[in-house]
Amino acid sequence: MREKEKMRHAVSVHLRGVKALHQVSPRFFPVLTLYSFFEAIAPYVAVFFSAQILKELAVLRRADVLWKWVIAGVLCIGVTSVLKAVLWRRYQTLFDDLYGRKEILFIHKMFSLDFSELDKQENHDLRAQIRQNENWSGWGLMRIPYVYRNFVSGVIGILSGIALTVSLFTSPVPDTAGRLTLLNNPIFILILAALMAAVSILAGKFSAAAEKLWSSGAEMATFGNRVFSHFGYIGKAKERSVDIRMNEQENLVRAYWRSDSAFGVHGLFGKMARGKMGVYASLGACITTLIIGTIYVFTCLKAWGGAFDVGSITQYVGAATAMVSNIVDLIGLMGTMESNAVFLDKAFEFLDIPNAMYQGSLTTEKRSDRQYEMEFRDVSFRYPGSESWALRHVNLKFRVGSRLAIVGENGSGKTTFIKLLCRLYDPQEGEILLNGIDIRKYRYDDYRNLFSVVFQDFQLIAQPLGANVAGSMEYDRARARRALIDAGFGERLETMEKGLDTMLYKELSEEGVDISGGEAQKIAIARALYKDAPFIILDEPTAALDPIAEAEIYSKFDGIAGDKTAIYISHRLSSCKFCDEIAVFQEGRVVQRGSHDELVADEGGKYYQLWNAQAQYYKTESGKQAWEKHCFV
Ligand code: ADP
Image 1: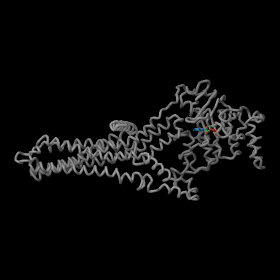
Image 2: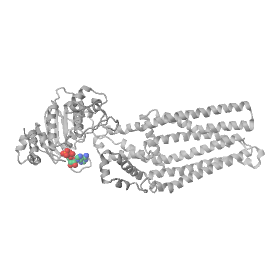
Image 3: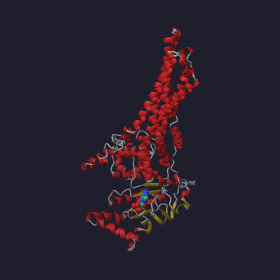
Image 4: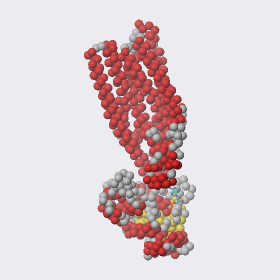
């Protein structure tokens, strides 16, 4: 991109950022504008009143006017300072608040994103990068308040500076001053004003060049931050503590804390600070001092010639010095904006990920008879970016109230089948029908609400037990209790003093309780029951349990599921023996269907082979007894 285009792009992404942040925090920018205004005029107010008071003291010596200037000065400087202080507090509070509110933009995007996009590793990486950039010197959206504040105070400052310095140029040196009257020549004034502007711009350019260097190290910084956020907190993770201690993993971690890593003294940024970046910053500072020196000389010469008094010298020198620093900062800000644009692009790349999934408008009738029929018609599916089919020509039909088991070896496509059924993905070929209508034609939320799923990697959160079950802070307590009891959590619930209000896990409360894997799984099942959806799916949430405990849970669940359609997934055939129908998956295809008895009778079939292979595990006496009790009775 050419320099001009780059700047134009930087301005446009920053404006977009202001708009986006304003949406989530409408009070932030009005407060910041007011604060920046008072911040900008404060030095000029002080300079103006000091000049007037000095003028009265040194030249005019009118006591009655002097005390009025003193009172007015104290009042104006005082009011400006108080307002600045009050607004600064307010700004700080809103800034901290903005940090959380800005997350709304990302969270909203995450929730509204097509699952297929959300599931992509590259999008997770992008989100992680954005967060890391934000943590690292606050690049990205959180840099916008800084840019906005400096822009507003820069512009207001320059305008105030012009107002207070105009008469520096227009007050003529009297003819009695001899050669110094040369300073009255408009060409001389024009050249000086142009020189001042040009040199301020040059100083600003140096400052901008120093700022721009940050973006050249963006990739390195992002990686550095990634390392930092991973290894910096690695010791904090409870589940890692044993491994770290026993395997002395801190040696591996330490290898990353070298002085030549991104943020180390000898790293990229350390080198830049000692090299180019430092040189640019120093050059900028030198030039700024030169301009201020020139202003001093010009002002003093005019005053020497009699153009104005000592009070005005204070005003002109003070105002011009402040104005030069405003100009330098404003131009330097262009560098910050160009650097930040690179990081903002990343944020908007994520926020702009398009949703390609078709969203229909049909409502899924809330049928009291729960008469739903699902059909997979010649469905084939490939994960985005994958060459191989995860499901191939799947045909399957099941009616409400039935118990369907999906069995097969790992990687045979069982979970993928569920993901398609819940419309987390759309198939590339074939169609999935609900009561004869393609599921794409239904409203997405409506359709998704037909399913309660307990996935293998279900997640509970550090919130009260009841809220976890209901998925909401306000809920029907009796229903939540019932669901927990049905899921087999009743006894444990009795032992909890605070019952449904017991906080799970200790992350947010010291009173939180740590629960075992088995208990967590029961809560997850209770959550599925609470939802009371017509379809209930257990996708191997019991994989961590032994096969017998799993079989027990599955057969008990059969009773709890009542008139709902239940789909069980397991690679352990014993768990699903009681189902009306079993579909056997192999390499993404349904290779067999039927009841357990039918399937086990087919000696040439996959089911027979799997069944016999698994039965081998239970040949010990105690295992055999339990096995027979649960599977063959
Ligand atoms: P199962 O549940 O039977 O163990 P899956 O449905 O999880 O099997 O996987 C079926 C196939 O799809 C496997 O080959 C697996 O590697 C692949 N697969 C699963 N999830 C993804 C994904 N998110 N991206 C790419 N391939 C995937």
